[in-house]
Length: 156
Image (cartoon, rainbow, N blue to C red):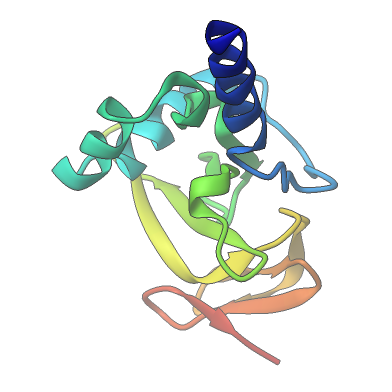
């Protein structure tokens, strides 16, 4: 009986551990999303503190590369794909939102990721036709973001 209650308690703890607050809509996922998810995952979890979170978490609570949402676009219109990404995992869910990253293609075939101060609730991403400082403006969850020369900031 104790074994049964212990198993039942463990099952309950695992099933209730993280609220599923997944975004409602992901605008566009690229054909090479698995490679980008893996790259973004390595960027997000590059610090020793973040790696320890993964190592010492039980399996249901570990963030995976599949928790990365990726949107492909060309923000600087150089003909190379750039990406807007977010990690959709309950550990990174704060105040109803998830972190947001921009990944710009560099001249060496890699990407330069930048974490934005703006966060996203639904990963509803649109690229606007207007430009700011040579970069396309974007709209995230209905909020316009403008490029100020270094990063994207709230605008209009």
